[in-house]
Image (cartoon, rainbow, N blue to C red; front, side):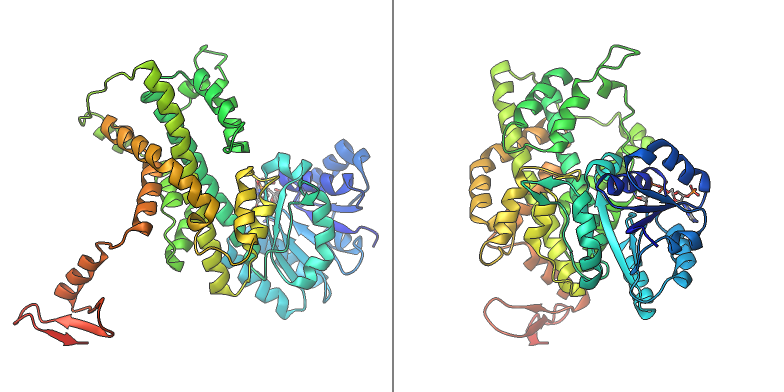
Length: 476
Ligand code: NDP
């Protein structure tokens, strides 16, 4: 065999990854269940580099140098298992199968364990950046063994996005670590998009700005600390006019957000791991709510507040306050995401480098942003902060933003504009810094109806009050 790496599954993602590899000088074997896709790839893009087309799995495997490196880019779920089952009997110990699809990390853990038994390396690899990223440089999050990274890493690093001369690709940790981190990336992406959408809604409905004006405001924000791919594309979407109607594009799109499920996975695993990711959860719920047409229709007649118009000066000031609320809420959403990565890492023994995750998300992926430099610094210097919120520099940002943040949430509430992301982020911030939480009362309630016991602030041990009797206290 002469190909250094093979890609099977040549729909848009696989085709673009194969082209990216070939453009970087690697000889790439290409294979797809339906062979016409393989032929099309070679016909259309064959002059971009060295491709070795294969019609059958046997031919594909035979064309690879050993140990073999096979990238699977097929539909996640059962198709991935079908492809693995097809290839495993054709492989030899030391060979590697990398799944670059959007697999659930539990599936990746299962597959990795099964292939390890047969002496094969299975690498669950998160790839972010969509089809453009796959072609021009994605952010790559490979899991799996150290050994497999030694063999695959240089190839992956060569095709990843580059920021300041560093590739946006690093070994994340064993078995499911890569897909777990990719999942959290998508969860954070949901939260970030929701926060940006709320900022837009407030600028429109409270400040009274038109989409084109809001696009300008976002372009301005993109020059500062909010500089990010998502803010940049938001400005472009808002500036776009519908050709048919001449209306702002955003006004002709049905307001029901869809989802493919990685946000839901993030919240599900956060619930399992006991990590409060309220910003991500609110974002997933907000998309769900938007899609409940019948529910929204039924509730449309419910009363809301009177809406006084803002004075134009106030509108400009309000826009600045929204920027601060957005930035503060974004810090909270990312802090929660990193908390989840940390919890997953501890639960599964992955030993994930938290700074490196920030570093490889600076380019290629959907949440790429200047902001991630700060997160990398926070987790890269000395002892990691317990939460990003208490990192010295982020704490300073929160300190200076908090009044504006409170004002925006208060104003949204007064005027009846839903801001679940901003509100949940602020509630998280206030709950963490509270001297005392009403959780004490909840413990009292639990002890009352279920004798669940409580601990005291002044003595060790578990206690129970005899609520139905003389209300004396017993040690549990
Ligand atoms: P699709 O998810 O649409 O999958 C199509 C590919 O899967 C085709 O090559 C198809 O082969 C193959 N396939 C489906 N079922 C089987 C099967 N049973 N046996 C063998 N092959 C099968 O392709 P995409 O390129 O959109 O995505 C590939 C992967 O990448 C997915 O897991 C997806 O979730 C992920 N993805 C990631 C993105 C990102 O930004 N990271 C963006 C988009 C996708 P055939 O041609 O024969 O039908």
